[in-house]
Image 1 (cartoon, rainbow, N blue to C red):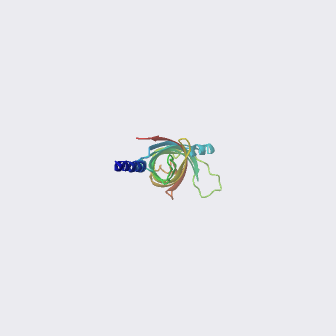
Image 2 (cartoon, helix red, strand yellow; image 1 turned 180 degrees about the vertical axis):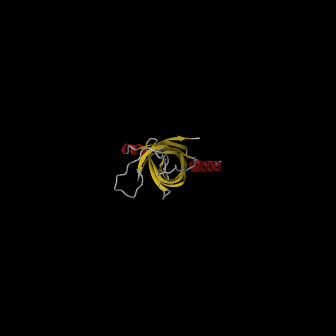
Image 3 (cartoon, rainbow, N blue to C red; image 1 turned 135 degrees about the vertical axis):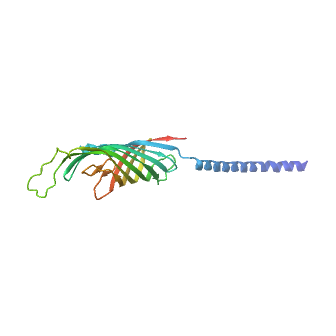
Length: 242
């Protein structure tokens, strides 16, 4: 009888120890499972859309320019985004002896890759990207000065004649390499800035003239197929969980 009491006494002493050890083991297992689920948890798809603020601002300071560009991107993978930009521009410009107006629309498709490691719940970006741009536009010669060697007499600006006409069905294609940032301001509102290096691939030219400006590409010259640009965006983000 005494042996039974002794065994019961030893079991009563060891039971809290085993119970505490089991609880600690369960807690550790639970932490591992939670950590594993967090690692496997996919980031939600994110759709951002907005506009380029730089073009309306430029139009306020330059009466010969009008521009509007809509921008958007969607998270496809962890830090990989598909991007689209759609715009329309009209610009009147004096280039040496020719005054012309260029107007048309453009579409850019490409991707951005985010290099910035966000904290949980953040969606800021420091990114590199690429776009393929297509522009469809028309050129109108408003007036020109005939070239002459002797400038003793004042050259008359010609505003009528066979060369004063509009030529449409013009197009251009180019590649853009991009570096930029996107920063969350309030709620789901983001401000962004990017700089672009453009390389013209091909373009159709008007008769007896050249494309000196291409909507979406900006200024273009005979000797150089490289261009540059920038944008300053305001976008709204919508998280989409699938």
